[in-house]
Length: 134
Image (tube, rainbow, N blue to C red; front, top):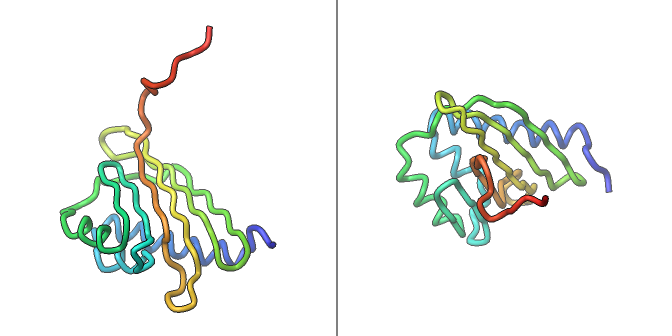
């Protein structure tokens, strides 16, 4: 299997960039179209756990706007010609909070590139469930 084919990385980056522009403008149509329209699609957000495209669309319909953010780092890995993972590290404007976003994308014959799973989280200052050695 070929890893990180430059053409596939460029295709995944184009999907990523389109999604980021849609987040900035709250373009619900583009955001919805970015996801696989299937009940097996999953999106875990900062405040929500969504299983299936219907739940994702219902959530999107309630969002007035998203917190503005500055990209700190983008990392993309492609596996073969039809599977890629994008990772975004960002900073929320005005708060300094650090966020992370992972999208797993697949090229599907009937849909093209779509997000099949996504996870968004904010970096906690500490982990109350972990104790330090020593």
